[in-house]
View 1 (cartoon, rainbow, N blue to C red):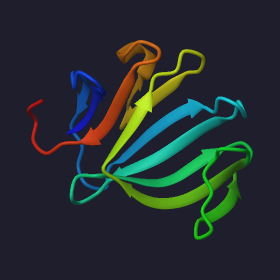
View 2 (view 1 turned 90 degrees about the vertical axis):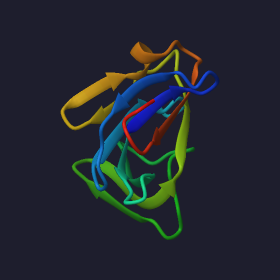
View 3 (view 1 turned 180 degrees about the vertical axis):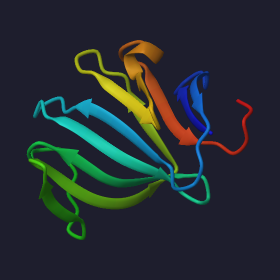
View 4 (view 1 turned 135 degrees about the vertical axis):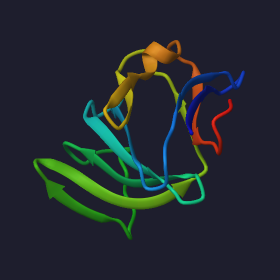
Length: 130
């Protein structure tokens, strides 16, 4: 289960069934560069999140860079192949820009799930119970 929960109270805000290898997309607008950023994650076989790539319109301060990363241009966007495994992804719901999470055909706005400024955590949990 992919779970988005409140970072303090651990209240489950969103729970979605996922399987290993399944793509998960997280998008937002970069706060200083004002470029839309889209992160592609997959579910690892052990149930974690793997950041596979980041996409944005131009390369600027605070955007992904690794000396071993593959960086290319595709369809007018910078694409950085990352391949970094994460146990969990802590986020803060922005008050000034839109953020979204997409699994399969479904997309959710983080601002519809938690108030601006809220600390939330995205992670994969085994089983279906909260």
